[in-house]
Image (cartoon, rainbow, N blue to C red; front, top):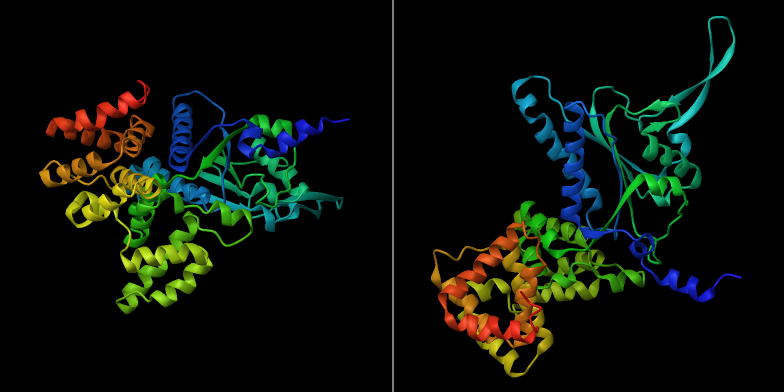
Length: 424
């Protein structure tokens, strides 16, 4: 008899825990995938015939898995063929082909058809569909979207594509790389997993975590509406509404915020102003009613303390912050500190030419209770040491240390002491 306790424990594990794989941000995964493709091509060009790596990217719906594949193909076109395209009339590109597993069958890829040879003998040949890259000498990315939601016969064929870069006896052009994308095999998603030890062994599995920092960077690069950017900078915890997702309700996620941004831009550009009643209806269908109310309150009523104002115009919000401190409202102070750090790490506003900005940051941090203040240091420590965000936050921290001795005495030293030497 199976151990029921063990089976229950395994069922309660999250998908990434069951697979025992690494969890990282969407930005880091994009960097890993793109670098690996470039490294592989460079190794080939230098005479080393290294194998390609098939990647399996797993993460919540709407987190940006499909989007990074589009970005990788676009960026590799410039980075691999940019010089060629500028010098030649022949335009080359790193192509991308994406297939949607839930709406396809095995026969959409390959089907035998009868032919008659010159001697009159009947035979069968395989007909390969347009879903199969065929032009030799080309480069591209073949993306299998929602692999685990395809039926078993299709999954068998897709395993061959992922393991051998081939369909039946037809091999993909050498320059084509294969990724598969999946939602996690949790209760929130309808999955049809086909267990295949060989497939698991031959893929590199990476799990995407929801990361507000990556979303905000992407939103700024793509020129999202400022209200969406400021909202997530202020409330990074609202980027993904896992609770609503679990109960089957409409839920906020990075993709739905991108759609909301488009609606806001369309209204402003076409009508010259935002229609808040219309936003309430559309937002409810994208984020859900509750999240849209919070967004509209932020956008229209100006009740919330914006991290941008803390840095640029501290005097305008000082009284509100003092009230939170006097009321010992740890929840709102923590929310404000996280938003402040998120704003600094993503927008990286300049402070070296305007001493008032540095003083604003100093005044705010020195006002904070020690447990809330510690979040500033932990946020810095959580960044990748090579990232621009880490360099900016560290530079700001050192600049405040140089500007005001009270910063070290009343802010930094007590945090170190409270952490018993654990905070560096």
